[in-house]
Image (cartoon, rainbow, N blue to C red; front, side):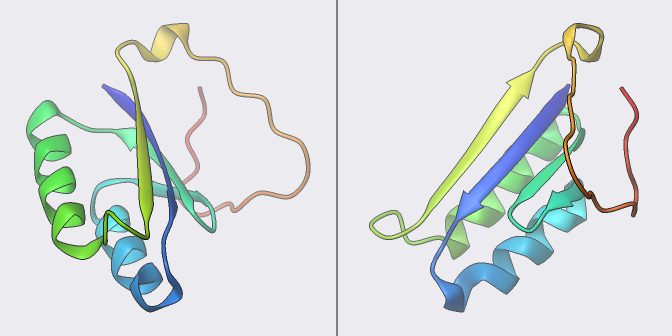
Length: 87
């Protein structure tokens, strides 16, 4: 499945969340990641993030798209080139 992950966490947890997300997904913007992962990988990602984030102060949103073929991506401006996905 294709997922998009976005996070807004307190500064002291940003690096840990970023490193965890990078293990499974590709960076798109400073706090946005995307990529194709399995259900098992998604479960592991969620478990790892749950150990890092403070649910009272932080937020992580994961959008699950069950078909890449139905995804359309529009970009405006500069974007990171590292590991880019072309849909």
